[in-house]
Image (cartoon, rainbow, N blue to C red; front, side, top):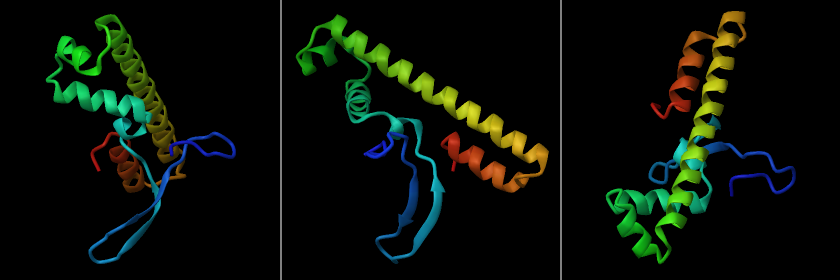
Length: 119
């Protein structure tokens, strides 16, 4: 589930748990761009990578035509570009909060690393 069934806005991860030591971490954790793709797009990305990026081979494996696959890949690219743009906007807003004193530099660094998938 990626969107709220009540209002339709995007969900965020609020709790992480260690299955071994049972420690819980609560907060607002951002998922990577790939994790924020819908399930169909995630599967396509996985199949694309596992096929070594060979679109002809992938189209055959999926049982679809090359133009259909190319359209799906183009839509995947657009979705990732949109997510990247959203992340860049969020990073810009985070930096503005540092400048205004609403957020510490350390907290901003953590948020920016998380947005960029570096955390």
